[in-house]
Length: 427
Picture 1 (cartoon, rainbow, N blue to C red):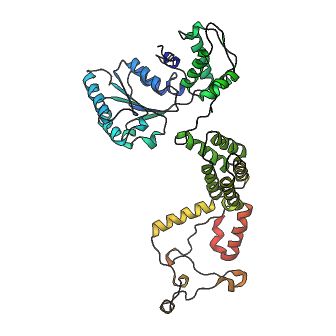
Picture 2: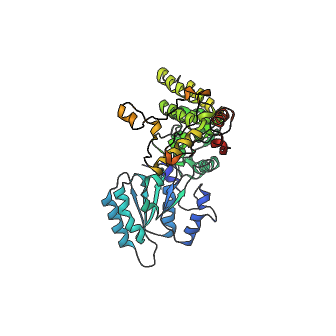
Picture 3: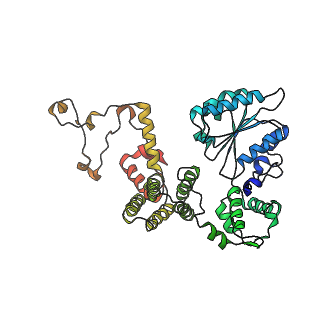
């Protein structure tokens, strides 16, 4: 049985390696270390199919170092220790440290990662880890401090086209066939920057046409063969957090088109509509706030509507809320104010409530001065009277700072009328 195309096309040298020029191009940091014949431990972080495993193997071949590999999915602490023992025995004077490549290192437990520390620190092995998840979240701090982290990018269209052409013209099996790449848009879209997925699609398309017939690849044929959602969206993975971050930042940045785009990415990827609705409610309170208090009402109404009408119609009130939030004026004064208040409470502890603000439900409390001197605001002109509401130690402290757009300016001007100089430092 022949190897899959993706394995047959795996590069053996850096000259054949496609993409990641920022790391392995001429003068790039990894290229310099490899050419110098010495590398330190590092972690390759990037999406699937961009060459993490291939790069580790190329480095081992270039340095002529023993190469050990472990999969975090199938290996335990014992496997780690066994490999380290083998590495110690294979290390000779003046030779490069054996390379230990760990695929999906983010899946290693803390104890498994702990078992690596000593060997990495002493140079028994040079660790190359590969992960699709943010290593700052998944790799223990002591191990992360001993490794550089290099970010690999999804392959760009030019990289993928180069890979396709190379496969069609150089692969030992494909070059025996007549293959015409009439359209490649669907292949690019379904691969999502993943070289392995692209080669698998190509192999599938070629395998569907019996030799010696010509293979003519079109977008329609690719879509018919695959019949699946081409979008990469792992609701528990890094992309989930990246896309929701882009969605919220688009709303905050007042770009309704981008907000709708990122919402569509989540919808097409199968995101829970309630998750999207919750984020809209949070954004309305955090980013629009007092600049347009109706935003919170509309976001909450959209949440209710989704719960009542379900999917797919629920996308419409969600889109309405997203556009309304994105096009609304923005203020985070309430958000900053509560955070400032929380920080003040943490710094000053349990300050006593002034006596005139305390409740006096019993005769004894009244005799002790509870509620004595409290002024009922509605008994005064304009329903306001100056009195102290903060604890004695914190009198005069400011926490809410108005942000001067039209709706919030009205609130600020009212505070000026009530409190005068206390609010004059706001502008």
